[in-house]
Image (cartoon, rainbow over all chains, first blue to last red; front, side, top):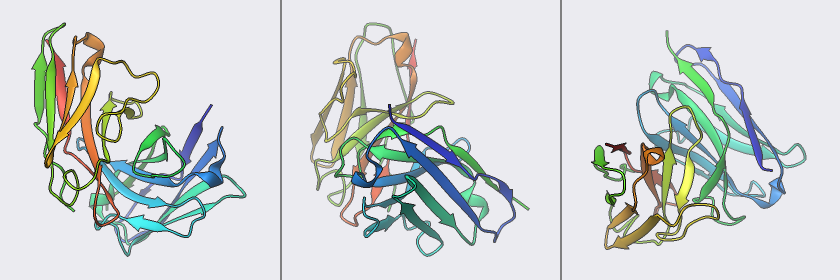
Length: 121
Length: 110
């Protein structure tokens, strides 16, 4: 059974930094590209970033480009999202997601339970 | 990248059919057959209902179907059931190698 467990969410001030983690199990982690998707309070889903199975390819939404960095440690079956220069509008529940097939990160199928990031002064 | 356009809400009675539209551009919906649909109940993880415009993952009811014409994709739910009440999101791959979601549609089963 696929399991994705996010952690690292916190309350912090604007301008701060935070690293989210997503521990994966139940599948061959290194074979799958992975994504981060967020949902701000009362808002819709927003794709944030994706990374290829090897980590060589990374993709970002314009809203986070230059501030967020996605990475992975395939030896630890863990996905990361380093978030810098945080803004109030980054407040959201952050989900990590595994695609339906090993290729095509744009088909997220399995999702974690999410971790809440709150940016407020 | 602008969000895809969905109606804010739709409603239907049990047993009826409803359709939710999702309008994008040639750079996303119109340019690729990589449109997905998600069902999202509050406090639960989103569930993939349709991928690649019209394909259903294993375990998804055949009451859910997807289609696309030009820059607009559609999700149709037939034989509405109370459990279908949820938020629905479309999403598409884009020419910028990004992924874009729609604003979401709240489905109310009357």
